[in-house]
Length: 511
Image 1 (cartoon, one colour):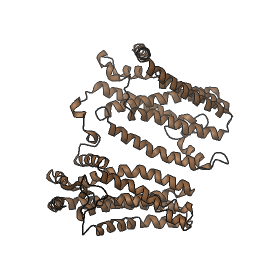
Image 2 (cartoon, rainbow, N blue to C red):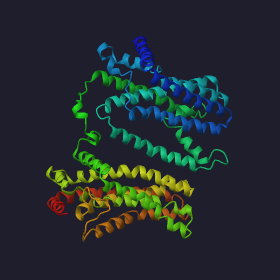
Image 3 (cartoon, rainbow, N blue to C red):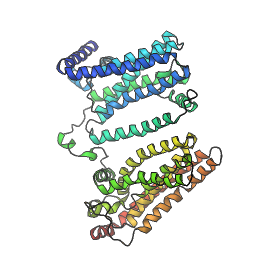
Image 4 (cartoon, rainbow, N blue to C red):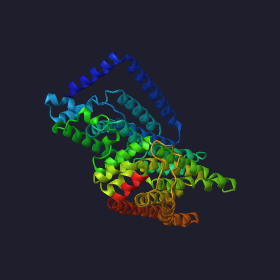
């Protein structure tokens, strides 16, 4: 069975070279160039200090592991060794799992990974690692990466096969950006003049005990916990692959017709619940309605512009750099305080279908959170990088969480309790109708969000005065109060939505 699968895999590769020559040779040339550049960098790393080598291998290796795990989830890659293709052979699922795992090295990414692992082993040997230990470490790297790819492809086939869409890929890429951008800002803001910065060394010590980084630093950092994590990661991935193959070959999934998958967009991504339906509809609105897009586009610009007068009057730029992120969080929590009014008469869909108010409130917050999280993930590290002291990060996260979550909770109440007229769909976003109300709800949400953030702001001020551990109190109180206000706002807003359905319909018909 194993020999048969290996022969099939080799025939597939030969067929790709024969029938898709241009594409295959382009991919081969790109892989050779990329691997050559990495091998050259690793060769130059042999003469670098041990600390520098440890940092490069840990960070670079973790990035490679993340790519092997995420690329099959983000891109619509078809698994050439899909275990379900072997159902017709009648083979035992254990044999199929072993055969497909053994045949994994017969691919272009796997060959590139093997070449890189050999270069990594030579780098370890140059820094005094025993050749036997280096060989074991290189083999462990290869096994871990191939199993990561196998498990990711299996999860994509089981979970994402009937939900794979452009929207889902967008969400996954958004999640990657939320992690990658702050890390890049952190690395760029460090002081490299005196060698490897101490904050980076501390980060690498943590990265070395994670599943994606342990195998890459094992021979250079042979702590028992590193060895345990590296070995257990490979074993856990092998067990996961066996369980995935067992599920594929012993259970029959419900077939999903093309008609079910086509044209549903965000409705294929969100859960099949009332709140998920509201979230999908809100996402469509947010991505297509200029009124929403203008509101979101203005927020980061307004936050940056607000800092200019402070710089003009002499406020140090290190202090002014900490202002845009909380201001963005405050405005993002406030911007949906009248969200229900943007629906117009379409709000009758929710009321007539007896959607619970809490589901409506939660669903409407999903688009804003998808915008707020990446925006703050960029604004917070950039501001702290300009400020220069990464110790303020917990306090900044706490303040921004309180302002954002507190504003969203209060907005969930105000949009039901005191909606006011806005520009109709199709009108210019800058054209506002005449109205007599609205100012009270706007001010109440702003003031309420600031009050929710008051404990976090107070602890942040104590941290600025030099009190030890105050930044962690700011983080805890900010996140805690924000979650409490958000939960209370959803519950109260949902209750008001259930009781004021007739008034909301009357408002929608008259504005």
